[in-house]
Image 1: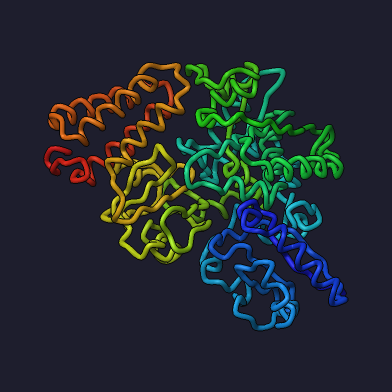
Image 2: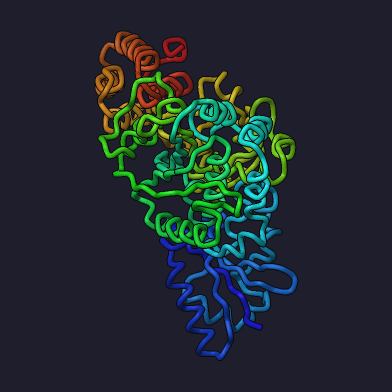
Length: 516
C-alpha cells in the first residue's frame, strides 16, 4: 500500500515553497524506491508552521513543519513516513493545541481533504446538506437558515434568512445568487483558504441558496489577486457539473443551478454589494443608490441574493445538521462560528474558527502567542481597514456583533491586525482617510471629498496647527461622512479615525478631555 503524504497547495504555503517541497518529496521517494501518494490539501491555517506536511499513519495523521526542500532527506532518514521522530515533528495533527481548541464548522474540511477530490468531499460529509435541500420546499430551506441565526459574515451582519426570504417572495422570471469573493480587507484570508482548500463547500452552499430562492444561475465575483483560488474553483465547478451536483438536473431532482466565476479588476469598492453588481454587469464599479434593494432589483435588474464566501459556506452544515445544531454555538444574536484571521505583529498568525463570544485577549495571546516583537500589544484593528482600533482596555469584550457595535466597532469579516506599542496611532488614523480617498468610487461627495479633506485636517492636527480648531473640524467631517455617504466606504471610515482619537489622544498631541 502506498504511503500518503499531504502537502498544501494553499497559496500561503506555496509562497513559502510548497510546490518545490512536494517535488522534492516525490523525487526523494523515487530515489529510495518508496511508493508514495502525494495529496495536495489546503492549509490548516497555522501559517507560522507553513509549509506544514502531514503523513497518514495507522494512528492518524502526523504533522511536520515548517518543512523546506533541504529538510526532505533528513525526514526520510528519520522515518517520517511512519510518524518517526524529528526536530520538525509536531505530533498528531489533531492534537496540536492551536487546532484542537477550535470549533471548525465552516472550515472543517480545509486542510483535511484533497481540495479537488469530490470523493474526499463526500467521505467527509459533503453534499449531505444539498441532498436534504432537494427534498425540501424553498420556504423550508429559507426557514432552516433563518432559524440557524446565520448572519452575513461581512460588514453589515444582516440576517441571511431575511435576505433570502425577500428574494424568494419577489416574483421574477430569473433570479441570481452572487457570491462576493472580493476579499479585500487587510488581514483577511478565510475566503481564500476556503476556496483553495474546500471549493465544493462553496459550490454546495450556493446551490442550496439557489434552490431556496428559485435562482438557476450563480456568479462568484473573485478578486483577480487570487489566481490559485480561480484555478481551483474552475476545476471544482467542472467536476460538480460532471457528477450531477451542478447543471440542469441536480441530483436527479429536476432542479437546475449552475455557477460562473467572474474576475474583478482590483477595486476595493467592488467589495460593496452594489458596486460588485455593476462590475458583474461589465460596468465601472460604482455604488448604486438604495432602494431598490438588490434582493428586489439586483443583477441585471433581477432579484439577487448577495452573500460572501463564508456566509454561503456556512449553509451546508446548517442543512446537514439542522438549524439547532448551528444555533447552539455562539451568544446572544451572534450565532454559530466565525473564522477569525490573526495577522499583523503576532508570533503565531493564522486562522482560528471559534463560536462568537470569545475575546480578543484569548485570540491574541492563547492562539496568537502575543506580539512577534515581544513588546506589548497596544491596538488591534478589527474588521478590515474601515474597522475601529480596539485598545488593550477592551480586549476582554466578547466578540459578538451587538457588543462591538455598542463600543463603536465592528467584527466584519473577522480580520484582526495587531500592533505593538511602537505604533503611531495618528499615522494610522491618517492612513484610514488616505485609504478611503484612494479607494472611493467617487460617486458621493462626503466620501470622495471628505476623505481628501480628512487627510489634510489630520496633517494639520499632527503638525500642531490650532489643534482645537482642527479637532472640531475633524469631528464635524466624520459626522458628515458617517451620515451622508452612500455606502460603508465613506460611512465607516470615521470608525478607525474616531477610535484612534478616543483611545490614543496623546499620539495626536491632545489630551483625553479634548478627544472626548
